[in-house]
Amino acid sequence: MHESLPGFSMPADEDVRRAADALRMLSDPTRIKILWALLQGESSVACLGELVGASPTTVSQHLSKLRLSGLVENRREGTFVYYTVEDPTVREVLERVLTPQVARA
Image (cartoon, rainbow, N blue to C red; front, side):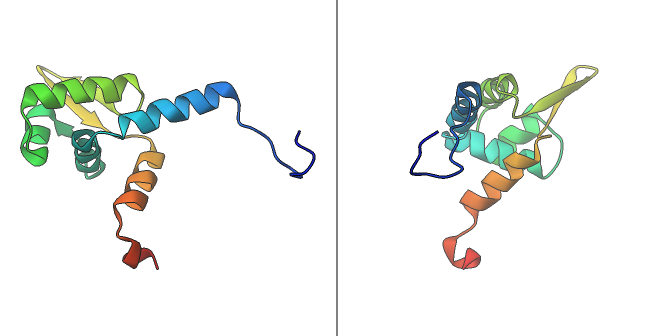
């Protein structure tokens, strides 16, 4: 522990890596739009494509990355796959960064 900073402790390397991976997933405007749309409720690839102004193929590629990173979950219903955001932290982060500074003052 650094003696000049009482109570200081560095997060574990695994926690830092996981946080960096999650933030990297948020570094793309299309992914932010997809996550924002999913925070409104469960949705399919086609619907998300319309909402975010991207092709279903592009949305599907982004969703794959978001799912692998643990930011979204999916469920299959017949031939359709529906996506959701289950982690409340995603909502907190996006609301924080998308809310204008004036509204927070």
